[in-house]
Image 1 (cartoon, helix red, strand yellow):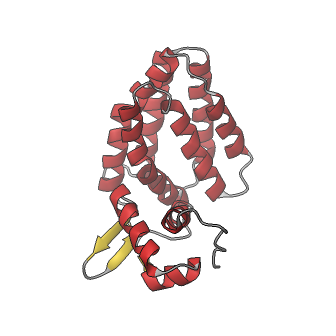
Image 2: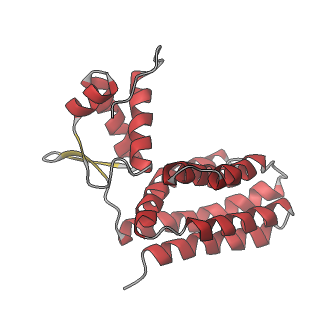
Length: 212
């Protein structure tokens, strides 16, 4: 199904980038799928130039792989890739949450994200809501560089989740864990919330990609 390009488009490249990213992170463009410039240009009603620029940007964030021989493809998720991404999250995200709580930053957005996830019509909406929940835990940590570093792996983490959920829908368990994390955070228990978040991240990747 073709996307209807919005009018006016302030940035065709940004429009195409967001459309392709959404298709990848909701599973419509599966890992390994070839991303052909001419086909995407026709689908989104643009020339090949914004498509090419969007694919380059997505390659930089780790969602797309560019090959001289195969062209652009959606990144394939395997255990090594998943553990690499989640290792970064384990190192940085709990500390960012500690700082968010320590600063007394609002967690209202995180609470709304949980509501949105509970009310999601499908896996795609739930995945996007879960991404917003995690981002709300660290975006006001007080260190913009730390927040940007976590933003850089956020899309790859979402891709891992999309693939894992396709094999085993474990979203209800993760939703319960999210509620516990937020409850501790709202109560001002920085250490308890950070520990719960660390366990949440670690247990997910272990369930989805267990050691052989």
